[in-house]
Image (tube, rainbow over all chains, first blue to last red; front, side, top):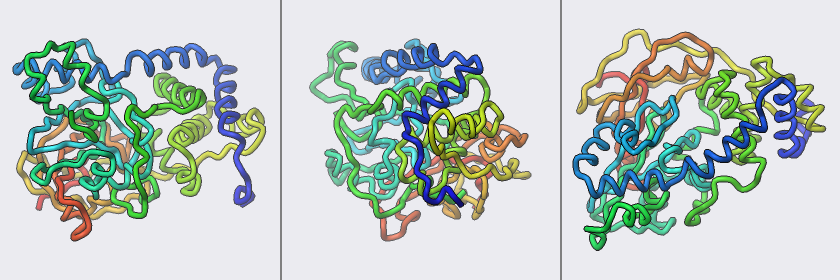
Length: 195
Length: 204
């Protein structure tokens, strides 16, 4: 095949090519890029998930609803999920249990709740290794879990989406929801950090 | 399909290049490419299963060498060509060179004819199946036994949905495996949970 030695056109030129081709066919390319930029930068942000976590820490009944039906519970905070994310499963960490999320086959996440996935989440190293060497990989990433803490790894192999509910740091009991939300990072909701 | 995208448990990869607050995008074209595929999904040009499978159909060397957004671009562009929205010739003329797409789409399959409804606590085995088309069973659970934790709402069956084959929606089961069973003597002890389509499972 002649493709054997062919090097591709630069990736920017390929993106521009399909943009132009779609534009010429009447697709609203410029508007879509603008709209997506707003979604990526202002709407699909980890502050959403942080609000969910802070509410769960301060409202036991909400936490129960969240653990039973994540999608319905986050809707109470006016947070929406794409149509194809039919199910949000919230994974509660405890002093003796740690949950961590991965997508080994692609890079799926509950992005409208915890934010779009960071670069390392989409890299082959994380996708290949965390299911098999969870404790080692977490340690390498700066989370050295005590031996008495069990690990559960969640592979996002369907359109069920996950978020980790971190353990509330003991010294923050009594803080306001707004203050608590500031503590919650995207990393802690993926499960590569504890707070 | 058993291709290079199915990375779970593969060895030889090094340290995760992790940074706190790591960026989602590294360049403007990445965001634009992402926006275009979202537009195409919204317009109904293709569905998410077709999109995921198109990326899996990339030539393996290209898959491994491309970053996430180049893979997204390639799968998305391949589907636009396959669906007759654009032609490869036009894309290459506009790009001023070779525009790698994907290997062709093969046949899909429909749901398993006899499917079992599992209750939480049931022991289940992932069928020993080798599927040439789209399948969302990571190879590392094939033939392995686990415990059902819960049932999801029904989803389109990806093995059909990625191929334009008509099929019934079906639930997935959250199945708990032990890493030590998946990779005996060669894994850190942990529970590994996967969302497994009903058609992929059988009773033990």
